[in-house]
Image (cartoon, rainbow, N blue to C red; front, side):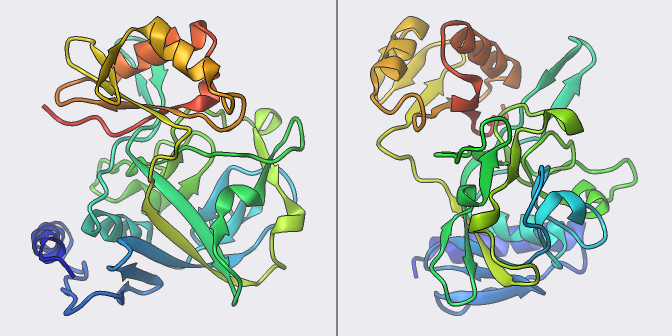
Length: 302
């Protein structure tokens, strides 16, 4: 195992211990899977967090993939016993950067989409093979499957009294807008019951009570993705090429997979505000890029 994970563990564990005296601080002696907290493990070799989960719902519209016990089981496929804060800490230990959940800006009277490190989430049930969790969903309006869900490490919010928002609300992995979501979809999706965009894909979900493992890791860009570096001066760069908004839209449209698979991932340089990303996303949508195909990575602090 390389040396850098140990340094990262030590630094993060020190911060966690200061902010939460009960936070686990064990440093692994070698690679492989190591217990981190009840129901949470870290696979150091794969840089992946493993979370125990149980199937609690197989039919109907959904607001979450996974929730805490006695919170939102009526609208979530899985229930997870582990505290969301422990999952948050484990994700930090493998180097994932939290961003922010959906938020409302009173000064500008507008909502901003979730952002954060791009994630890949899969699930393994019983002795079966791991599969992308997107297969457990289908679009509510069209009853068709999904080729991509742009998951992001939104990181939840902290309540005024210092308590971790996702611990209070049980909002572990969400597919609609929750300000306390630990993990979100990197796009706005209303939580209004009559407008929910996803429902359970019953045929792909194991029986109620099945024990499963959620596998959370950094998302590796596919050949179909366009990762766009957004500079402080507004310059856009794709694969070391400077492009205009029009050229970016053209790259998106000429890709044969654009209708289903291409994701335009906006990645801010240091100091770039979320508002700049939101304005760029609005431009792209106005030029014909579907909003579901745009995702934000974490805004880097100045």
